Image (cartoon, rainbow, N blue to C red; front, side):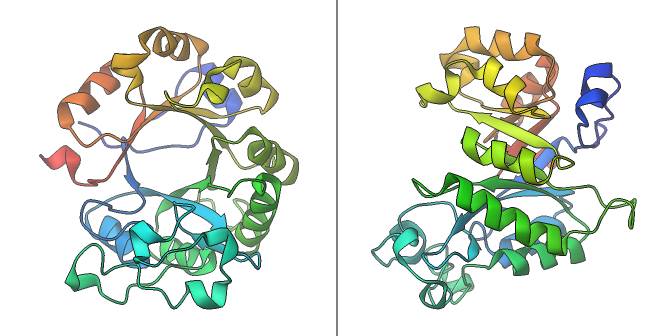
Length: 268
């Protein structure tokens, strides 16, 4: 199976769709290392991943960090909210011990450090804007300001693709469109978030999205919506897929990439 999909249809080219691999490492290599950490990014690269996906939110004092949850407890074992904790305290927390003793003292990364690893390892990246409630615009602004300072310009390095910016939040993607219109944008749609399913097509057009990202559960729970996605003409990506038979089904339907915790899924 060829690892990279080349977009040939006119709509994908007009939308500026990035050249994506079939597999994108979800939060790095989440099945093999603590999610959204530098070691997870290195693990994904070591396993042959070409692209990774990470989540970005803000500390209380406005530093962009790589973290998924609003609560700290699942990853760090410490109670509290990310939005109520300063970066100085966040960077001291252990984000690896919950996974295994082998990863004790692995830290929550600052976005700058994660981007440095991604660039050093030659990876493409999908940056998901994962704002805490009420910080949808602010998170996008600070994240994009950080990325624009670090990520090479395509005119300077033709081998480096721009990051794919995605979010469930229309406000965040609208901000991305205003600030960095040259970066491709992916709109995320989940089966359990009615807001993102309502008028999704109009929102996608308004946000000038490049790719549409949907929960794999649409295969079994919301098949009518899946038919709509397939008919809309956007390059489709699906999350989170850790079984090869499900990945094959999605590829046969026309999905171009799947987000997976297992960057070695194609080897199974």
